[in-house]
Amino acid sequence: MAGRGFRVVVAGAGVSGLFMAETLKHAHVDFAVYEKAGEVGGTWRDNTFPGLFVDVLSRQYEFPFQPNYGWSRKYAPASEIWAYIKRVARDRGLAKFIRFNEEIVAARFTDGLWHIETAKGTTDVADVFVCATGFLHKPLLPDIAGRDRFAGPSFHSSRWDHTVPYAGKRWGVIGSGASGVQITEALAWAGCDVTQFIRRAQWVHIRDNPHSTWRERLKLRLPGGYRREQRRLWQLINESDHWRLKPGPLREAMEREYRSFLDYIKDPELKEKLTPDYNLGCTRIPKSDKNYYEAVQLPNAHIVKGQIDHIEPDGVVMADGTRVELDVLVYATGFDPHAYMRPMNVTGLNGVTIDEAWREKIYSYGGIALPGFPNLFMLYGPFSPVNNVPVPLGLEQEIGCIMRLIAEARGRGRAAAPTVAATEKFLARLGAAFPGTVWVGGCKNWYTSDQPTPVLWPLPQEAHKGFFEEVPLEDFQFTPTGPRE
Ligand SMILES: Cc1cc2nc3c(=O)[nH]c(=O)nc-3n(C[C@H](O)[C@H](O)[C@H](O)COP(=O)(O)OP(=O)(O)OC[C@H]3O[C@@H](n4cnc5c(N)ncnc54)[C@H](O)[C@@H]3O)c2cc1C
Image 1: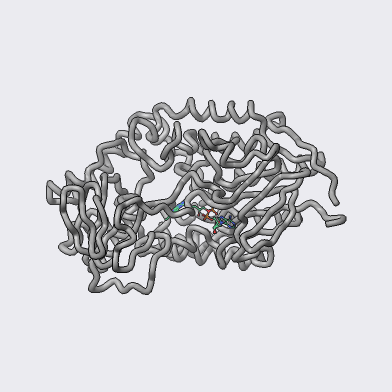
Image 2: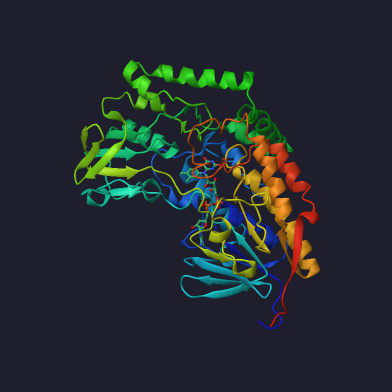
């Protein structure tokens, strides 16, 4: 380690890790990325279920440093997003910095440096440790009696078994979130016999998803065209997130529009089952490109609402005794949204672990840092905008700030961590913004889960940009880094 220069280790090679890697490469910082899987892409690598499309405009899901002029549709299919991410990694020469199939299991801050350990026993040492481990990557399976006894194929939606043929099978899909809706819709239109088990109805966005035209593509390639269009998109975001944040005519108009989608359902009993009893936007809104409400009215599609009592080898039994026979069971039951980098064992100053720090509640400073964990940064950590700001845009703002903090810490020969007071001030600011937003008011959502408030960004996107542009250095403490060997 003698003479070793300043070094950054990044965990994860999804959208966040790759964005960070490209930025570090560009800044000529020595770094390595550890990725537990054998390929880049994170979410878009793992989720290959039928019917998955991106829920923001494809063009909002671009790295700012790599325009894509060729999206096939307004909202691209997941396979296209994944192909784009892989292309970015290839074109930017990022693969040589990534150590695939290396899961980081522990990171400990001692003597002013991060000591990293992987599941294979590899060790590494870094001045800065960046967790780009995602906020929806740890699948949640439901605690239903008999789950292990199901005789046919069964899998979580993020582990789709492509060896199972669609045809001639009775499919069960457990879950009414975005994945459950998209899978049910896709299987129903594919002619499969599919039963979706829901506990409560979701608001579903029935949207058009046209192919992009050559005119649209050409417009982007004209001089100044891409920038102009990009500016227009960001303007759209600024205008469109306000209905979630405060009550008023915009929200009422949105609610009217979503209620009108339910009119696609002809059968009053089915309509009743699929009518939500909570405010629009409280949960992440599933997007439907092929009209979910029409799909579930096909003779081969069924909605069963209620509590599942148990699973048997050949089906599901509801609490009211209804029995549904099945050949394949899909768990569209979501992810542990508050795992973040865990189960990784992260230890900061004075031997305090991340589990201890977050025992009572999840918190962070700006979604990027934690008091007591110097030079530990997170991308899309707690209270990042997981709803009203497209992920790449949020990353641009977070990474810009992290790079400034890294430069400052490096310049001082120290390690940066937010103060407790600054973190509390940040959390209080967010806490004060929740009343009146769509995320509060008694409805259950994964943003909140077992936490006292939803763990997301409850302010406009401009405020997110503003926050990161103005992060004061006084909000940070600079811990001495120990002598290098
Ligand atoms: C089904 C689904 C659909 C979604 N659709 C949308 C959408 O339409 N629009 C949108 O904006 N967002 C969507 N999201 C959110 C999506 O997760 C983000 O947009 C984005 O992909 C997050 O990127 P990430 O790199 O932060 O995390 P991830 O994509 O989760 O990547 C994290 C990476 O870190 C790796 N990793 C984790 N732990 C370790 C470790 N200990 N050591 C080494 N590597 C590790 C993982 O293998 C993974 O490759 C969706 C999420 C899901 C699950």
